[in-house]
Length: 292
Image (cartoon, rainbow, N blue to C red):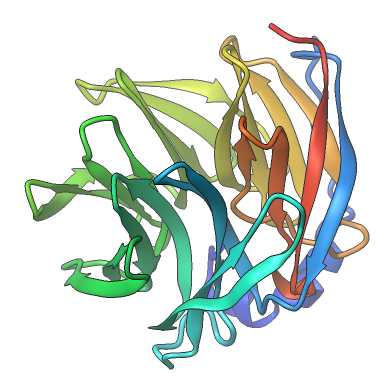
């Protein structure tokens, strides 16, 4: 979710309308010939921010973080909803007792949730919160990624940091990352949505730009095929970027005021899941285009 300034948050709905006057930047060379085909839309999940796929005991389902109130308030209203790939709500409050949950990630039998200034750990088998870890110095935790070794990365948009949970200890992994938000972890690098850029940090923390000059700040990052990523901007845009940095606009709902928050592509379901935030809906799309 995008939070650049508190006053923008309080005026978020009007900001979306005003932002529709910004001209999008199109790549000179499109990354792929790709289009999004709507499949279904779920209504009734309050302020959905993020979607992840959970794979456990041969069962695949999807979790949606539902803020259900003020995105900055510790009000206990937040929850995780459980849905399936057919667009059905299986449990509206699969887990409750959260505040304003945003990004999530799974590793083995645990789901990690960013909840303002805490990292919440949920046991998949019992659907219970088993631990809440305060993140010292954090202001607004936003997205989460987990690497293949179980190291957890958490972005803090207001603080401009990426935190790391390793061996049950939390430290600052990256500092000075402007509006740090969307994350995706791969074995040899970490992708970070930093303002209107996508930056790749290798294991030595050396950075390079993967995508840049997007009209709006990057919210979600999810891989698609072997050579590209789908990225979202909260204001209502979804882009495809290749590992060469080529950028293609796939969806623009800015003028309609339909947000596209922390997206997730499921290779199993062949669907892109898009939380629409203030619309209180989650949409699914087929990603139609050339294979690589």
